[in-house]
Image 1 (tube, rainbow, N blue to C red):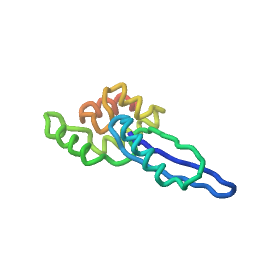
Image 2 (image 1 turned 90 degrees about the vertical axis):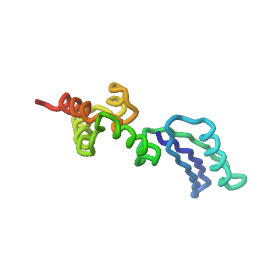
Image 3 (image 1 turned 45 degrees about the horizontal axis):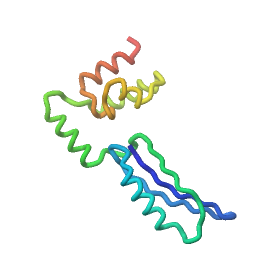
Length: 130
């Protein structure tokens, strides 16, 4: 998930926006507090505004740790979903008005890349009009 800490202030016709973003596996309160502290360090003295914390699904490319995790899974007995399957699956999800989060939750994975090739094939078939 992406964690974003943002400070925003408006003073007359001027605005200030300071943003810190980090990719995390889970919502780590200590790291979020550190991000808030970093953002606060850049706020001009006397500047009033508010700090917001937003959590959103992963939109960044996989981190090196995630890539290594995928490599371990690929080395296992089952092949993992291919890029071609991911693209087709994303198209089918849009056509069926189904969210990625919903699909992952139903199939017990954190992200689409954690699906096996066989499971992806099954889901694509189920979402297709055959």
